[in-house]
Length: 277
Image (tube, rainbow, N blue to C red; front, side):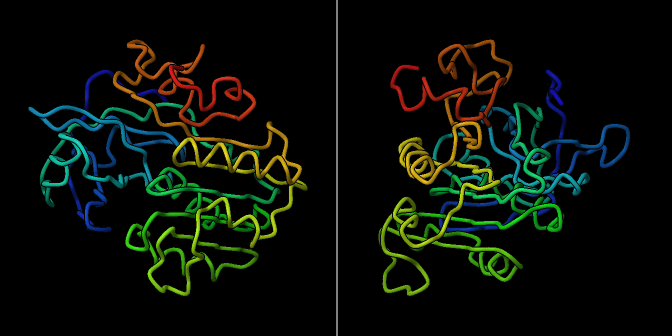
């Protein structure tokens, strides 16, 4: 599923403001669903090109079944993402992808799934959650744990409420500053382990967010019997070329853009949370 070297032109079909500085672009290739429909796996990413400004790697958050449209949820932080935030319906940009390795959803069928995210780190697993709930009969119990700093950082509240109503599903949300919001646990996502029953029996765990959050979450999972081979992490490093050529995203002997961004934890445990790698 590697991407072409030359960006394809895509058009903004819809722009959704998710939060104060967070937005979603729903894109469609200009050739629509013609000769080259967009095929990807949950967990992969695209390089988005804003002409005259630059490029940035962004995770795909839609479901692969939506092969005519694909969504990217973005926080406006840098020059390129702030420029992307100015796009409106009908505007065009360049897209190259998809790149990287996705989540092991085929291997997770028939198993319980534990999804742990922090901050906007939830974006790379939204495609996973959409995938599972569209094929709910293929998976066991689903546990979704999400932590943010402030209650206003918790986007997609309606989605979390809808997911919580799904059968055999647990949703637990935390905020360092919940501001009297009784639906949120006051604390971080790792502290949710004391409030949510998580079993390692026939289960797979998928984590995404700040590396320090994932590190402590991995420790909590292992204390509950999860082996390193049952834990998957999505890494975020300085991905610039998306082909493993520029070495900016090197992680020990691996490249996040090419060999990840999703890794089975035992592949990266030696290099996980080590500065300079």
